[in-house]
Image 1 (cartoon, rainbow, N blue to C red):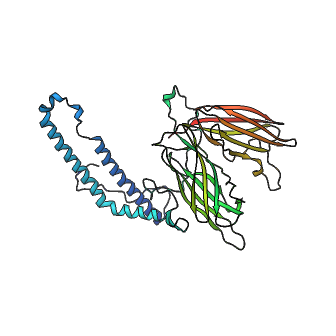
Image 2: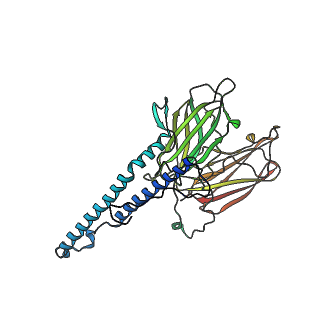
Image 3: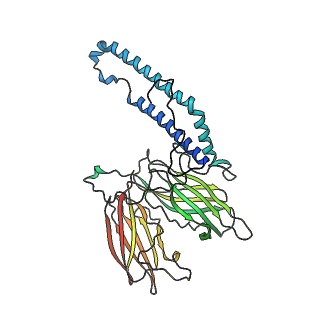
Length: 409
């Protein structure tokens, strides 16, 4: 930000768009552009401050201290003058734009504050730990896909870096203020270190609500679609409703956000199983998850090559035995009640985070006229590439592919 201290840069009054905007949206766009511009200017001032640290005492030999004393005094004066200039420039930004930005941030925060008797007061129902809450789209789905680094060739281990990750194992009603059964719809999303955008774990329309008969039953999780990095905090956000009937309206079951502590300042020797709870509205929701050390992402797909398949496919790791349900044929049936046996088996969720020094354990159970037949497959994790196996379960031949990738920015 150059120029005399007394003159502030001119900020754009509006944002150009390719399609017409109504007046309210145009005003929001202008305020967003102004806020981002002001914060960028403040960041530039701070970056300039960090780049100009004055002089370093280690740059001068002890024998030359007396000869350089006058020069040191000059440098110190120059540094003090610069410090004053940077401070004044930041103060001017605060004077000119501070109240407007504060009012904007407060308005954005009010939209995600709510009162809940179970919480004992007002609380945040959605993520608020972001740089610019008013500009952050809380409903935007993460565009990052799985298998982003599968085809990258690494010459040695120094070419890549592994981070911790989290596997969401189950989301259950730990307690309920009304009687079971309940018919649940709504969303459960995760926000991780990669972009803090929505990664869906559960998404169910009112017409397709899930019946929960007891606290032992988990929501049928259909995500995440990619590995969830656990560097800074990861958040799980619930917005769940109970479907009413002719005599009763729909009611809020759970609405809020809970935090899975990040691993930036922690050192894990092993993978660990943890849980956290969110008590809001008519329930306490329990989330069980695994923290995975030095994780790689396994993306699984299964295809029927011969015969028909009806059964369950589950996955776990060698250290955390809690199984992730990838497929359950009882959940895929048509209106006539006949089982669907497509060539590519539809998976509820297809991604598992695995510690690079452990094993991925895949279990395929087929229900046949002769009873249940199980086949277990062990996979050694990799940082890229894929595995392809042909598996025979009873009279069915399956093609199982596991694609590997690191989880990184």
